[in-house]
Amino acid sequence: MYKASSVFKDESTFFHEYVPPELPHREKQLEQLMRFFRPILTDKFVSVNVSIIGRAGVGKTALAKLFGKKLVEESRRRDGKIIFEYMYCSAARTLSAVLRQVISKNWRKIPITGITGSELIVELNERLAKEDKRLVLVLDEAKLLGGEEIHGLIRSAEFFGYGKARINTIIISRPEDWIAYLQPDLSEDVHTVIELPRYSEEELRDILEYRARIGFHEGVISSEVCDMVAKIASETGNARHGIEILYHAGLIAEKSEEKKITPEMIRIAKNEVYPETSPEILRGLHVHELLTLLAVAVTLRDELAAPIGRVYDNYKVVCEEYGARPRTTRNFRNYLRVLSEIKIINTVVKNLKRGRRTVVTLTEIPSSILEERVRSLLESKAPTDIKD
Ligand SMILES: Nc1ncnc2c1ncn2[C@@H]1O[C@H](COP(=O)(O)OP(=O)(O)OP(=O)(O)O)[C@@H](O)[C@H]1O
Ligand SMILES: [Mg+2]
Image 1 (cartoon, rainbow, N blue to C red):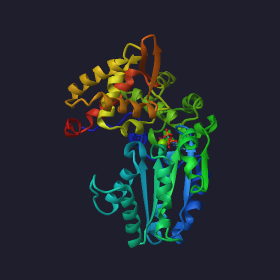
Image 2 (tube, rainbow, N blue to C red):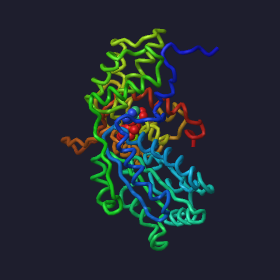
Image 3 (cartoon, rainbow, N blue to C red):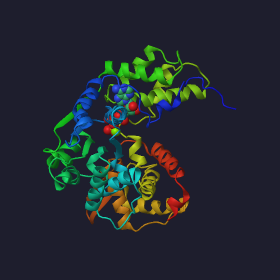
Image 4 (tube, helix red, strand yellow):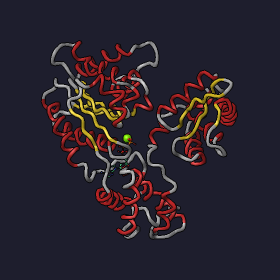
C-alpha cells in the first residue's frame, strides 16, 4: 500500500525536469522576456531573437520554460497562433535533428534520411505560413549547433521575402560558449543578451525556502538548516546545488523515517551532489556514448588517469554486459570527443619518450557516482535501443 512520506509533500518538485510556477529573483528577467516577445503576439512578421547566458544553475532553463508556459497561455487567450518548442541541443546535436523533431511533433512525421537541412527549413517556414503560426524555439546548450547554423535558420525568412519572419529564438548557453561558438555568427541576429548572474547567499536563501515550502511538509526543515544549505550553495551561486542538497537530505530523513532534516543530514547530502554537471547532460547522451562513459568510470575506479587503450578494453567488456555490439576504435574516439566536449571527461595528450599517448581523466564527479548514474540511465533504455 502507498505509504505517505514522512518528509515530502511533493517529491516530484525536486525532479530535475520540474519547473516551479515562480522563480524568485528572476522576476525582472521574466518580465523582460515578456516585453521582448510581446510584438509577436500581435505583429506576426518581426523576428525576435534573444540570448540567455549564465553559469551553471542560475536558472536559464527554468526561466525559458516558465516564460514559454506564460507566453502560450497568453497566446491562447488571443488567437493561439504561437507554437513554443524547447530543445535541448546536447540530445539533438544538429539543427536538422532539431527541425525534424519540431516538424514531426507539430505536423507530420519526417523520415530520418533523405531530407536535407535546408529542405527542413523550407518545410518549417511553409507549414508556419500555411497556418499563420509563429514559432518560438528555445535552443538550450546551443553551442552544440554552433552560431552559423542558427544564423541560417533565423535568416531563412528572408528567402521568403521581407516581412515574412515566423521563426523566433531563445538561445541559451554558458558565457564562455556564447563568446566562443555563438556570438561571432549571431551578433546581428540577437538583439538582446540577458545575463543571469550567480545567485547571492541571500537570494539562495529565498529560493531554497520557497522550494522547501513546495516540496516538504511543514516543519521538515528549519530556517537555520535552510540557511546552512544556502551558505554551501553560495560557493557556486548555483541554485541546483542547493536544491539537490535539500532533496538528498530529504531522502536521508525519509529513509530513517525522521520527520526533520538535521544539520548532519545536510553534511552527508552535501557530499553527494555535483553542481556543475546538469542531469540533462547525461540524458542527452546516446547509448554508445553512455557505454563509453561507463567504461571510463569503471577504468577510473582505482586510478586518476587511464590510457585510452585500457578504456577501450573496458568498453568492450561493458558492451558485452549490456548486450551491445562494440564499435570500432575510430567510433570510440568520437564518443570520447563528445564526452570531453561536454566536459564530463578530459583527454590529455602526454608526450612520452616513445611517442605520444592520450590519457583520460574525470572532471568532477567521482567515478563511483558516475558509474551509478550511467548504469541507471542504461537500464532505463529499451533493450532494442542498446542491441542494434
Ligand atoms: N529563482 C529560482 N527559483 C526557484 N528555483 C530555481 C530558481 N533558479 C533556478 N531554480 C532551480 O534550480 C535548478 C537549476 O536551474 P536551471 O536548470 O534553470 O539552471 P541552468 O542555468 O539552466 O543551469 P545549466 O547551465 O547547468 O543547465 C532547477 O531545478 C531550477 O528549477
Ligand atoms: Mg540548463
